[in-house]
Image 1 (cartoon, one colour):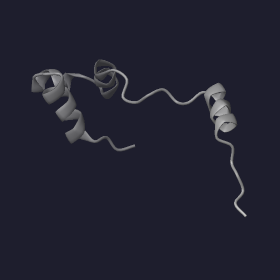
Image 2 (cartoon, helix red, strand yellow):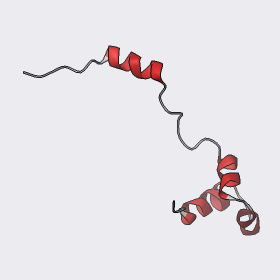
Image 3 (tube, one colour):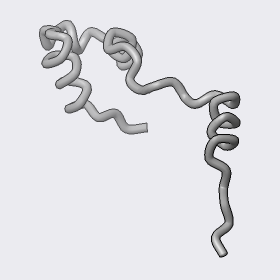
Length: 61
């Protein structure tokens, strides 16, 4: 897996205000933890089933 170092540096140095030496002392996992959730949690089974009930697939004639 390739890391997008430019984006990570923007997030750490620009977004979090880390000094370069602080940024480079972190592991990618530590930086991710500091940045918080990056995306919404995946959809659970119950929500998926509710969407299927609310919006059933319809065959078009």
